[in-house]
Image (cartoon, rainbow, N blue to C red; front, side, top):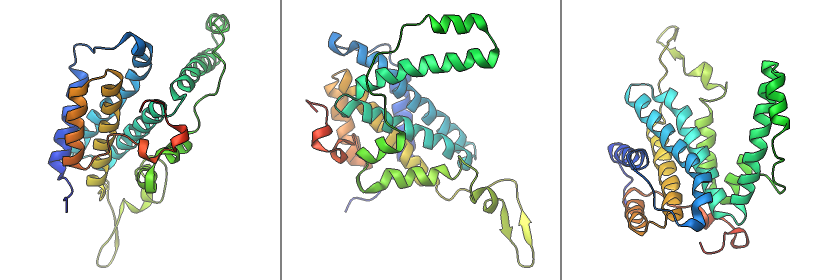
Length: 246
């Protein structure tokens, strides 16, 4: 029976994924996939950036605070996988990005009371027609087998939102009285680190597929077995929804 990977092994893997994307001098992308790569690269880079920040905070003794970054890395990685493996997902993301851009600058113009910016936004080309991305939880449930990632997302969310943990984490029962404390303990440090490692694997797999990097795919396949990390979430997706060729 395969034993679960230890914490140091997961941290080394996360570090390797960060280094791979951060230090790359460039990527060999087929012309057919050029626009797709440019569209998706930033999402993968964000996964690595949040994972980097997670490692730095958790190693600095801020494991509870770093859980916020683990959740964010997971959200980006799952969204990236959905966009890539679902038939029509890339086109829906293109529509989403175009709408998001206009919505953002429209709201910014209102917030700043800037008429010049408002006029510039109004002069932008209309976004392409078509469906936008579904809500995140809908994407997650599309590709999440046995609700593992959904449960993980829920647990990590306890430190993102104001929940019961904002009370319980700072109270400690003594022999005769209740004590308050400033530093909160985080009992899910291993699980959070595992989720970050999964997020890195999911994002790196998409980069490997877009760049047709067979050597990297082989490496990911081996690491997937060694560290018990899924390379892709396509097995949880209905056959009728899968992108052709995957």
